[in-house]
Length: 137
Image (cartoon, rainbow, N blue to C red; front, side, top):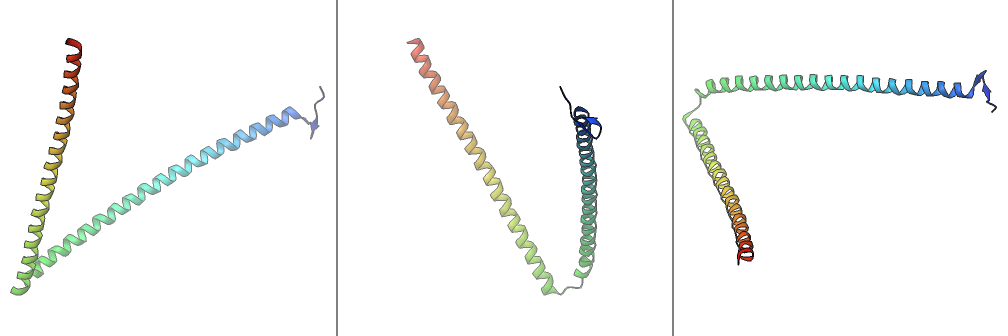
């Protein structure tokens, strides 16, 4: 067989070099992607850490603000204090009503689940009794 020569190299040598070049490019691509992913993950982790720090700072700021406002509450008028107290009372009433509704919903859901289970078991028992009648009569 006649093999062609290009640039003084045989065709099989050229194909082998092209294959090696392709594998090298593929390996380089995979390595670069791994480095990019690692850096992206590090960046995300750092952003989450910064976000957590920001949240902590916000919480500390709000806590300090509340403490300062508590001190300022000593200087509220009787009418203002009564208004704030009525809002607190409304909040506690709403919280109790919400708790009642949640408890009622949980209990009704549990009752429904038990009723469904009971109905399933009764159905299974009826099936078993039917099979027993067929087998033993």
